[in-house]
Figure 1: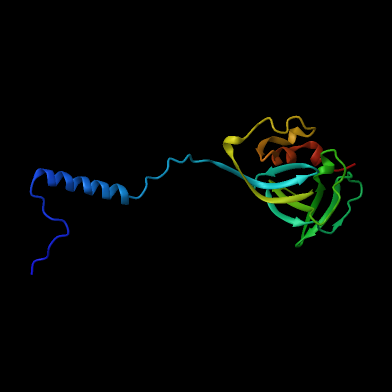
Figure 2: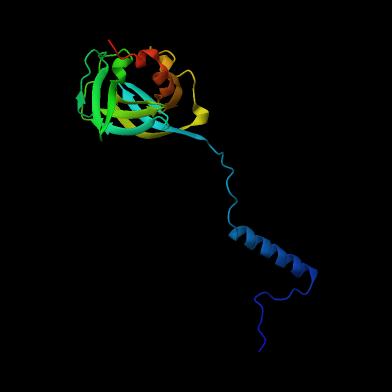
Length: 187
């Protein structure tokens, strides 16, 4: 028994045209949609943190770890913002109060207080901050070089991002670790 095709054989030009139109309509109705022409965004990411009421982000290349405030031993003859030395898993880590260094009052140690352990070249240090917000991602096209320029410590900022009405200033850790004021810890 011969099998019959689901589509009957066209007998004239009109039937061929109608068959082609039906095939076109079927294809349009059942075809996968074309991909959307989406703009590719480049994201900048960093660790978000707070000092007083100001929000910052720092590049991950500087951050070695985030830790709770450790037990510290004071260093005689050091500046007030040098909180001391901590033994972190057998390694001595100097602990600095970032807010105190930047000319504000010392950071009160609370439950949410954290230490950013940074490492750059031969310098390792722990920087006390009020709070850590974890990884933050920003659309690089929204970078604004003027954010934070009106602040007292603007030498340590490289612009920032405004998100939901909140300014996130990019903290320039390289500038900090090269600062003579930061490296001069003796009182």
